[in-house]
Length: 172
Image 1: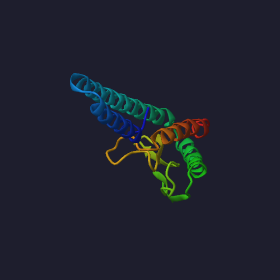
Image 2: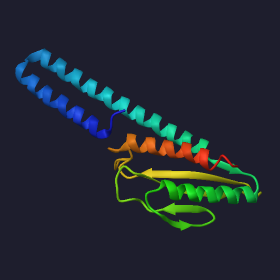
Image 3: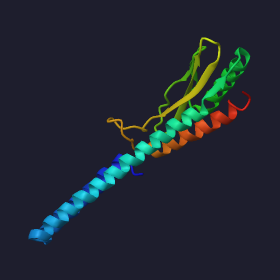
């Protein structure tokens, strides 16, 4: 999967080459090359968008698999304590706020570094679900597409979800 930057770079290179060829080629051949270049760039962009959607689906699946479900108050308290320790150990900034429902850290100043927080949802029957959430500066572009650090950030988040399920969910 290429980033949005890579797509724009590729399209720019194709456009420059296309302009050069129009000076060298005449008539139908130049038009044919122009059409081919546009189609090639469109295919590359569509493939990149599809890869982004697949990666986002994979991240959502990893989040769901990493969710910790606990049945008793005691189990939930222990899992929440492990979640707090996990967030502290795996985030580059300290915990800023911790309540019975959320454990939050601040966004780091660095780009491309994953940071995590946890959320706990308690049902009326006392059971709870604890989820790890994460983000990374530079992961998304301003149009909510993949940012210039998307691939690296997505891998850090997937790894964090796997570790969370193993470390926090193992004793549940």
